[in-house]
Amino acid sequence: MPPSTLKLTRKLQLIVDLPEGEERNEAFEKLYRWQNRAYRAANLIVSHHYIQEIIQEFLYLSEKVQYKLTDEKKDPLGILKQSRNNTTYRLVSDRFKGEIPTNILSNLNRALLLSFNKEKHGYWKGERSVKNFRRDMAFPFAPDECIHCLHYNVEKKAFCFRLFKIPFRIYLGRDFTDKRKLLERAIAGETSIRTSHIKLKEGKIFWLAVFEIEKENHTLRPEVIAEASLSLEFPIVVKANKTRLTIGNKEEFLHRRLAIQAARKRAQSGATFSRSGKGTKRKLKAVDSFYEKESNYVNTRLHVYSRKLIDFCVKQQAGTLVLLNQEEKIGIAKEEEFVLRNWSYYELMEKIKYKAQKAGIELIID
View 1 (cartoon, helix red, strand yellow):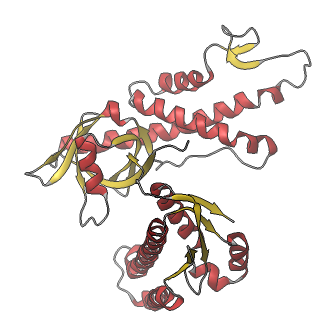
View 2 (cartoon, helix red, strand yellow):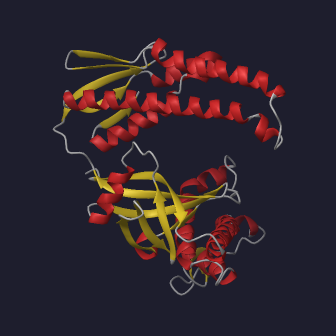
View 3 (cartoon, rainbow, N blue to C red):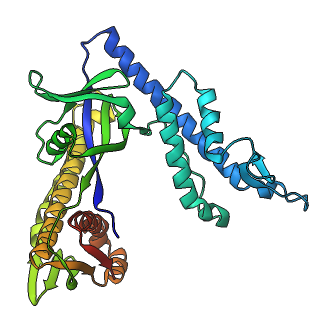
């Protein structure tokens, strides 16, 4: 039986809720120190798991050696003093004791072991390399233990809470998504917040919050199949119950995108004559803004197309959605530079997959 809940990740900007001064600076220093220790701990954890996994390769000179990656107390062939999960946790907790909360280290260790177990077959075959983490990586934490007093402050007109005793308020800005509603439901206890991440980028703090919500309850019939086709001429064409719907068209999608690209080219040509002030960043400010405009436009259009597709399936009570001939079309797109550059097959499929899962519709990619 498929799970009745779904996890949604939302990016929320956090502001340290302290006046400008020494306290605020200390909070930022603490966060950046935690990020650095998490980055170093992540590389150590993955390196040790890799060595543990291929230790048999180091023992090839002796045929009599037998071993198991288990606690020696539980198995006579075990070579570890404790459980495998605990070996790396003890390693990083002893090394960074007092420099980073243990909650971050335990969640980091658990997540990396899970991902390592999924990818280790690729390591054995030589098809993958061991992960290498960047200094600006996001670090995880368990909200149940770390987030306190999440509430809406009427005076500040913002959601406020304390994380590791640091006061924060959430900046939503002109939010047109479901972030506010999810936070209100979390405060009311209708939605739970799962293991999330903190991301520090260009002096800003972001909370990658994971909300676990109930799936939408629709009257769907598994025997009713909706067949959809993705293409450049028409972003989506779907048929179900002898009803056909065309969602979007080539001119609608490409006209604005090509206009933004043309404007960016003009900005690139004129960047030579732009007033300098802070080097390259100042000269390319206009060019970078057009990259962001194009990305936002495409993301919005794909959200609209995928939303209309799922709404059509719900209206037709289609419990199964089949995307036809996608592998073939992706292959054609890779051969044609214009199509590959301007039509985001993968992004659209990901949005369809997420919305179908939320609505309880089974998605099949042919």
